[in-house]
Length: 166
Image 1 (cartoon, helix red, strand yellow):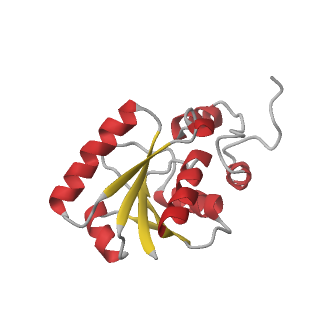
Image 2 (cartoon, one colour):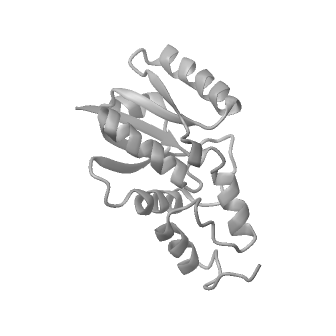
């Protein structure tokens, strides 16, 4: 059994991310979802909140661990005993960015090979940005986030208890 490391900001983790996690488990046997900080990004949710939402999204999946880390992916790769980094890509912009990151990671850790998985057709338009926009507008992002995460956001006052009439 191999270990796939799936690093990301996950602000918040979407159903598209979940699909990539499930596919990584089927390919490699075990997945470590690493909620990371990127100093070039501004986050809507704290690291702890993003970790909680990732845990809620992946709850019940066998062979999946969710962790938070503030270090570098190439160091975490060795610490968790990963065999591969797995990243999902929705479009050519994602692919170009992830290929650049994969090359950098490999140049700094020759074991840290990256596999890019294309988004399934159902998830090509699903993004954390779309989820945040729904939340900002007070609309539950059904079909974008796990229902358990939507409930978590309601409990934290980020979403209204009832759906707004359209």
